[in-house]
Image (tube, rainbow, N blue to C red; front, side, top):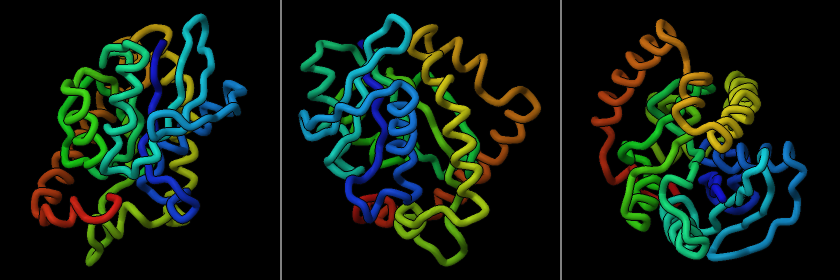
Length: 218
């Protein structure tokens, strides 16, 4: 079995916010797989399905973003799965809105949901499906940015990214993260440009007060 967890905040008030793109991807995947039998287990909404011959568990934590690991960690333990059996979809401010990046593993990079997963799982060896949401507007805090809906110009880019990622996630399950990265990550010249944007964004994010990153459900 593989666990595919989308990170986000529960509740209608957060449903279309930038921080909930992980939930959006899991919902789109559930629709693609014809999965609709959701049930609550270990502080998460879960639903079982299949990708090829592989059984998958779709997961949407109900703990709010900052405590995502409190839901995902116990599920891994219950099903006796390794961190490598986990695929996590989440928002990323350090890449432009609508761009994507698949990663085999990595640090939290300032993302509180990933920080919680690392704390509860004790390993960074799980696949990441990163969906760019871009940087805050001038004068906006990080919290205001991630808890706001996408502007009209970015909303279609996010839908396009999610559609593009559905077969990518299936590829991770059936063929592994390395094959999926090779097939679906941005190619050389485009990737180099994206990496430069990420470095620039990371430099900007280092100037954001840490307190802003820890506030509320962000």
